[in-house]
Image (tube, rainbow, N blue to C red; front, side, top):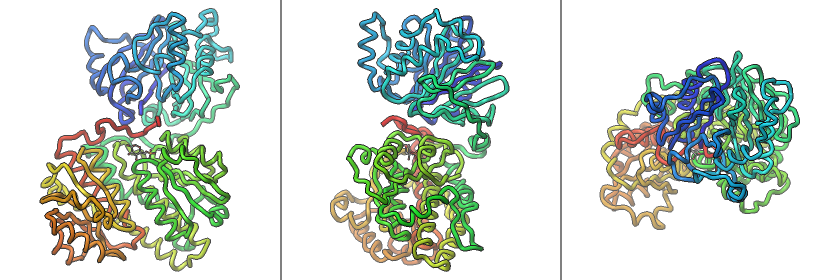
Length: 625
Ligand code: G6P
């Protein structure tokens, strides 16, 4: 949902910024732009489309930029204003003295715009961001600019103007700002949208995500909400927006560059699906103690008693994280015996939820930055809930705002369609449920059986992945069909939802996921000859029931694609196609049954010529509500 990268240092800023933008392209990709500061002038170029379009524009003689050592760039996912060149960032004031890139939404932009129009300013875009650029320019007092050269605590004109403008601003932002008259100063600030400062040797790279930084330095400072930084080649200062100094904490970035490269794969989504045996192993590492028969979750050590006494759990998230949350609801009630609900974060935050004593809220998010999930978490905390995070991105906002949590440790997920994060989220929820169950009633022996089963999952996932060619061949037979159903029961109902979402989001095929028994209450009317219906039907407590549902679809001419247990001969007599998963205990089945559905969606998208890693209209991290 928009990506920002900015640079101050000794290198040629343009190439570094373009490389950074490519690493952030997953955050939004309808337009892009760059600004280079040189000779007291801000030079900007913007283009509609992918970063490559901007890059080609910068190669033409007429649109080349001068070389400079300070600059910033942006990749956009439109919120206010269509994806056109004049709405692309950077935005400038009407005198071309201030340039700004922004991630987030300025909620009171129309009031501010009216005020600025009355002051005689003219606007050239429909964006909220241009209003902020203009407002900063409005407060910019050139008389202050002599303070610019030193990093000595003296506020420059730009620093003061940014602070003054942000005081008038409601909404969320991660911003980088440059002023023509302060040619070596970059001012950045955040509220609600992530911003990380990479601290190099005589150079600084600021970005919305460490992905754009780690190629240059692994030393990072995570800005907190309502903090800003003034960065110059010789140093940087951090402070609150109210100008209270903040001592920066420099940390080592979590991930390495190789994790963000495609390697042998054509798409990040396929890479991330295939990585799951390893990512699940990494997620389990150090957390399963078979010798002592216990689950080790260091981040929860101080909260074990609260969790054991919890009277209610609310799990919240969006998209795939919500689906993982639904598996979590089944796990929490089944294993930890705590009444649990899963709530869409966007609904939870606005519906005046009841939080009683003993309520634990678990926020699930790959990015740790999803605006609705963050707002739901804040609402829950405000009402006194103990909050836990199940997050992948270390140091992200949600991770920092929860009381405690468990990281996924599955490595960066770049493909917009979430895959390895889902399996990581389900693994963490399983560990959490077992962590509580063991302290409440579960015998060590039963726990050890669970842990043994969990330890087998990576190898079992590997076996499922071996079927990728079969899944591809079957998928290609149905890829022209525009309507699909995904049906499952019990633990495999959330998997049906996730399978349908995967297919929708990357191949643009309409798909619905349902509890198999619900089909009879309406959706069965959709079934016509040849319609593909995917049943998640491994052996388990509801196996016989789902066989009945399969017959009902078959009788109406539907084509059955079944995800079934290895060695189940019977299923071959009723299904048209079968993908198999090894046997495991029922609560762990989603970790295996989701894999064929991820591969199915992937192969469908490739066969339909869709852009797998960057599906239309979507963004990896939705930082606006
Ligand atoms: C977006 C992504 C989904 C993701 C959801 C929640 O919609 O396209 O893949 O599941 O956001 O993201 P989070 O980072 O909070 O898990």
